[in-house]
Image (cartoon, rainbow, N blue to C red; front, side, top):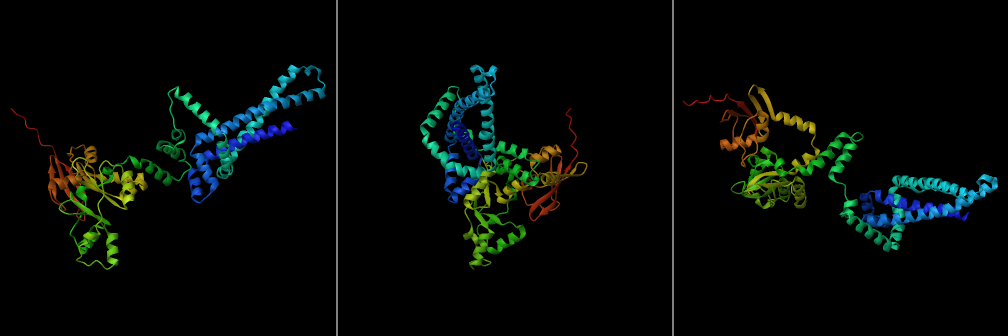
Length: 442
């Protein structure tokens, strides 16, 4: 009877270590962090164990291994005696041989212990840990940490031996590499795997977020030629006129040119001054100008967003990579638009960039990139650091702010301004003229 109780106790010990290991490893770290901030002591213990998973896994492995060895030893003796007694009661003369009894005992020990160990010591505890991971982790964490402290010398020896063994094969590792954060690629695979069950807009939002860090400021910035700036000595009345005309919430403030940006002027800051009755129509608003923040063209929008958050800005000026002049600016709304954009709408918008109106006649959005129009129309507009778009090419070539019906002929291409949005170019008609006949020299 005592031996049977010992067997059940060893299975319970094995179940304890399996449950503790599984629940502490799989419980959400964000939830544990939340409980720690609320002052939950068991959660703090769980957090400590999660930060040193090598130690936790070594502790549970020692407990599981020792309990299994003891279980096999005690079970063999106990079940052997039970088998022997059963055969004696049955008085089966052919089975009275001790070697036969021992062979049957070993078989029965293996089957019985394997069954109990799998059901009570492994599957049952793991199922409970999956269902009640937070509760079990908080309940078993303190005792697990105490056992870990008690077995620390053995744990250190085991971990050190493992590291030495692996180093002999040229394998170096750290705990962060073994149990660290999931990579972006792995998260993308997780999103794709759950796509069937997930809400489609939410899935697309996650996809956009993962692609977020691959985009540079240059891809999203408002080009230099499209920047609406405010003079450093401008008045409140002039700002209101610009606001009514353009409608932006903030503007770069310049002195002589866009290469001389003095700061950023935001409507919110002027509203505060107006509330305090510090502003009149002829008030020069330079005192409300905030210092500008600059990023390079090749800066990732992740870094740009961090800079905006750090300095409480919604706009950053973009420097040219080589010469250091102003290449453009980037708004917070443009960055956020990357995350919440709809790929179908983006495709529709891209298809509207260049619309064919007739043979060799196209209507082109001014914001269409030089690379895009060259590729789609099979033309060869020149690239330049002075512009990145078709509208920028026209502004640079005409050297003035175009008006409706203004034209430019470049090689065999005729550009006609067809639409303006305020002072900005909106759409341009591009006509492919017949190529001039080649002159044959005699």
